[in-house]
Length: 452
Ligand code: S5P
Image (cartoon, rainbow, N blue to C red; front, side):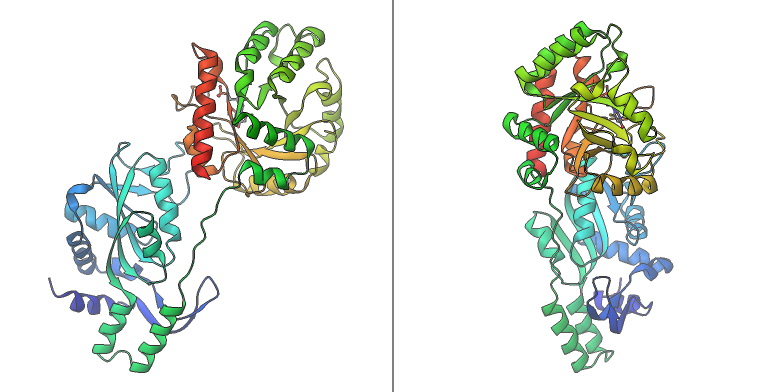
């Protein structure tokens, strides 16, 4: 292969760096613009590039190789072909349907994954990609980058303990271009000044703690659930999907000390009786300091919902601290829930749910503005000021045969910044219900602490 300098000049001919005045996404004016995508259009150059990158790396360390989408995908593919290290593909967004997989290809949890990136600036896309790759159980120790814009990203990742290997840095290529008279002294000076003065500090989005959320929370029931979480060091909601009063009360007694709320589907209780079911349940809620959350998932016009909420045989408004409701009927349909905090359903955990991005964005507007709503049920990240409740949590199962899909507590706290997990079968189907509640409480609390 030619020298690194000659190789760079070959690449440069493809127009990968332009000099002038460019306004970047951040609004800053930059004297250069980098786009390495043309490299993939020259197979010989791409192949050489792959080999230059591979030469810098301790190749025995890696089980799989993955490019940061999209620009680095051909680079990672070429490196895989040259080294026989198997390739995996990370999606930019998890599929909304089907397998919901974030990473495609064959890999096992615990394997070490080499990450490939075309250009590193602030390090933001790498930090996000690393989190996603690690959430699939893979380990990341090394990152290889074609060009470092020298704006802080490399240092950030090194401080986090990753080995960052870069083939070229912007000051190095500016030096090469000066040597071959592509840039004047003056231009070089201007570029170097820009580099020196433009470290882009990338602030990682931090989740808020329960204490911080409590300060911002206006609804009394929202406050209450946060206070209980802090007092009991628990963020666990147990879903009591049992069908008799006896089972319900026994379950509440066993899990009560470990939960912030007990979630009911009161209409599946076959022997429901206001005195025999609700009164003792309320006593247990007081005794063990948890809230009652009726998972009614209202979804009608306001007038009908009001009748369903206040009347019928269940009289939900008399006893439920929290109710779940769709917001499909619009903002005003939520006005009727005056006695309970509302948890709005933004997206559902089951395969093929129709709660797509568009729906969620519209629903979120209602969540953020309706005074009766304290938070939402979702499988996605929501703004930090909204309380997020996530069902579809199970430590030992990936799903059921009716479309339910599960994530682990670790996954939802780390990736979604969830506030409360909702666990049904993981607890009520366990051989030892209380032991299982304790386990979910501990795992979820630790996952929360880790996500801070
Ligand atoms: O999207 C959702 C919303 C809810 S509230 N997915 C869900 O599974 N739920 C509820 O959470 C569901 O109705 C059930 O009561 C519980 C999950 O139970 P599991 O046995 O699958 O953990």
